[in-house]
Length: 158
Image (cartoon, rainbow, N blue to C red):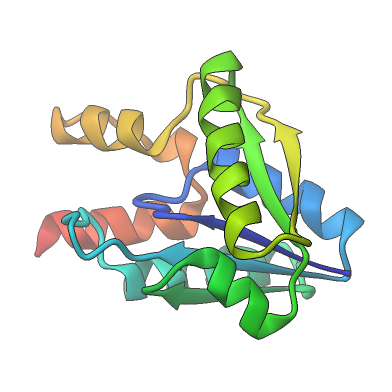
């Protein structure tokens, strides 16, 4: 069985990584898809974030997971890759309400797709929280994998 875990991952956090670990225990193959929205400006380049995620996966010897960057509908990516499960992490009931809407739209595009929810271990951690704290000079290294922290630091130095 194959699953996709998609998001902007701008930046990829320890919360995201925890969801990936859980999904990789249940599925034969997990695709982390950095979904690129041309209407939004990224803080961290998708290519660099993808490489940081790959490095974190290698360090933990997670071998049934691939990382891709995709500029279309994630449901279309799933159809192309023959993926039937969509992984999402939930921090709270607001996430659930939002994710249920996304799941319903995905069902319109790919009726056989099922969404699987995993509970987040650290409900306060989000990409936007990490970006905001970092923009104020706060150390956010505890909230992201070491490889992502290196990516964040490299971006700041550019």
